[in-house]
Length: 215
Ligand SMILES: CC(C)(COP(=O)(O)OP(=O)(O)OC[C@H]1O[C@@H](n2cnc3c(N)ncnc32)[C@H](O)[C@@H]1OP(=O)(O)O)[C@@H](O)C(=O)NCCC(=O)NCCS
Image (cartoon, rainbow, N blue to C red; front, side):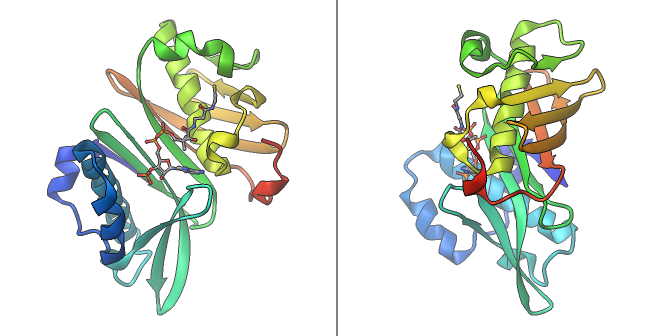
């Protein structure tokens, strides 16, 4: 399940950050970053509330592993659970998603359509990457880049992933298939906004241990 919104709008409905998150928030210098950070946490708690995944959604804590991958930690029927989630913020928008079954690895990414991915293409494109029916080069390369960003969040390896080892195929209905190095298969979908793309994807099978993946 995923949510997308403008930072200001979500902040109006912001659920208060967990007391332990205040320490992180206080260290942030940039006002934009603080607003995006709070909005993404608020949106995740709203999803937790909508999916009834916790006894007290406001108590859901967003924790990170050592690679930076976030997880929502909740208590349901007195037992502590970790729910897979993903976060992205760009240009005043935030997008978040929660794993429907709680455990599938998920990844979400928002990218503003720009010239940059066209310029960087040689650094991240695989010869088999393809986005059907998208004529505009800026939107096509932004979409392929965004797919790889979302996929890197599924893998949870952050900057360690070589994007040239990913093959992305987007069909003309916006369905996405991603293969990472013949080791991990992912599927997802794209939403096109006027000036941006939002990609949400998940692993097709349970992930093997991250240190067993050759990034
Ligand atoms: C995680 C990553 C994708 C960040 O993406 P980004 O576009 O800079 O920023 P986004 O707003 O979309 O995502 C930020 C969120 O990613 C999440 N994240 C960070 N590390 C993560 C990881 N290892 N796994 C999953 N999610 C992660 C965090 O939740 C973060 O939000 P938060 O700080 O509010 O908690 C990062 O791996 C990255 O910058 N990759 C680029 C890799 C690259 O350049 N490769 C070379 C190809 S040429």
